[in-house]
Length: 292
Image (cartoon, one colour):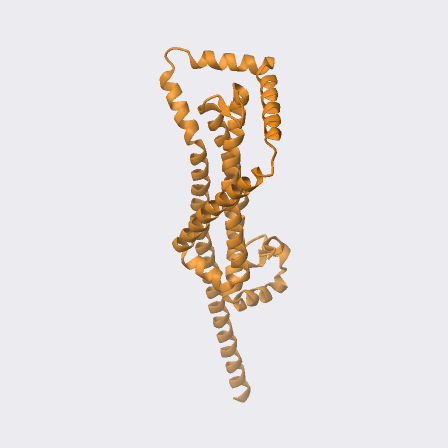
């Protein structure tokens, strides 16, 4: 449903000054009758449109998306900076800044996979909700059960995925020549040596070690480490909290808009009944005068 293509100006107050340019005076009676004739689904649809126009839905979703996308980056930074500068390969050991880069890539990759699985499960749920009205009604009426099922599906997908990757890796190793692994390790070590010997990298590492060894900043280091280690969880929690608060705000605003529209519809219907009653009385009086 393309909600942006709907013109809801005729559903404003009858005394709205801007109403005239959209609905000339001669057509207002028709607009009022249209409002009175709206069924409940039409009223809900317009209340939903009005809600989206007020709560800045896109702005909040963009903020949530930004926090989720920043989570793997924060996880990679935490893995690179808080872990040791040593990575063991199949036949060699890599140390220095290059090892931290590898750890950072590993941390970011792990979180990216987790978020990708969660995204896939959420998309699957949305697909079935769109295809089945009964399933959509069940998930909306049972949010806690739906959340539990989603978490269980996420845990199951991770467990099965890890098991499947382990089996694939085990079978693949049988067909890989050990010399190929050694050559690959040697290439990684060579790339690490070039990276670590780079002037910019080496100077940056020296300055970082100097800052790390400064006296009197141990409390700040502890706080920084805690903040960095918790940053992925904080970002992800902030994203979910933002969506939850926004959802509650949207629900409240929708109920308010829906109630206001139903009240307007009721008042207009009562006004039309009173008008018809006056017309009927006038007709009766005129008929009585003619028969007199």
